[in-house]
Length: 461
Image (cartoon, helix red, strand yellow):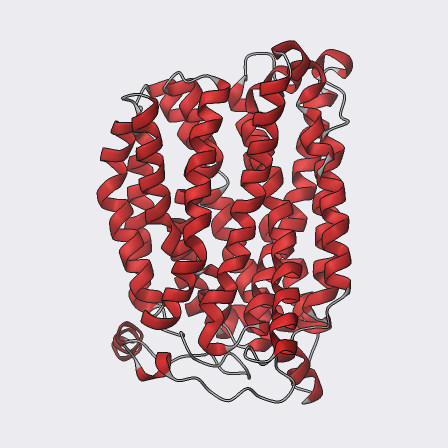
């Protein structure tokens, strides 16, 4: 273990002391303000995934079918990179808090509006057009939400506990997904199929609005992060948002590429396991709506229980060992676990839980790993742009690609093979990731020491 990981530095002036009652209270508020937006975002994804069959009947009853619904899921990712390019540099100039207040309102408002959309039977082609338009709004706002929330949490957390506190942001991810999935399951248990098809599927979408208003209230109670405030007080935030964007692309291209490779691995696994899996269990394996939802819910609850422990563990052993274990584990076990899922309900639960737990070391350390790859003045933009471009290209399209191949080619194990390919890409990028556990992320320099892979790359050029 590196001495830097073990060392607990003194708390700088203006930063929350995690050992004091006031500091603990402030950190709890920061966790809540960060995680609620992530929970709202993923609540939408959970509801959308769990109501796929109802959305298909309401908006894509023709030839497209489930492919149309998966396209509606994927299209929300088209504007995520643009959202990152707009919101990220603005957040690096005017602060994290102001941007996060706007993005949570857009996400929750667009989700709630899906619950009142007319169906294809009522307005024809306008129904899927309106649905896709709202998904685009969600994608644009999400492009600034996730990078901002992770940056906000990382910049509030103490250096030696960034993994522990940052993991609660991802706890919010799964909490939102579980909430959405559970909401749909409860409705399916108490409503008839006709009631679900006619109006029941709308109710979970409407619930996103109060979630967003709660998140807005929590964020308005917080000051901006100590790291950003410190930079402002030193007049280190210079130039326009456009100049910051250009500086990011020209100066920090290497961490952008490293994050791109890691996010491919992260989000192919993420959107395959969390977004596509309900459809896979129902249409490919033949489970009922309720049974498939229960499998996902059990797996997600097991993942939630482990997230804080893995986050805290990364503070002790480092982020890179966690990622190595996860990438190698998923690469080795993806095929056998997907084969196992086809053997019945109990085996489907086992297979999904195993893959979910192997994925958790990545998920639990996102907020500690990715914001620390960039210096403060370009952190929000660097995270938001790198993360969202990779997510749009490979994460959001994963359900669509998986569904198209399994449905048209009959290759039921394709999701496992696709996940293995993504993990291989992640393992290529990982040697270039700097270990930043225990390191300060203050200031205008890239945190952490150069890796051996970086040094070899520089010497070869």
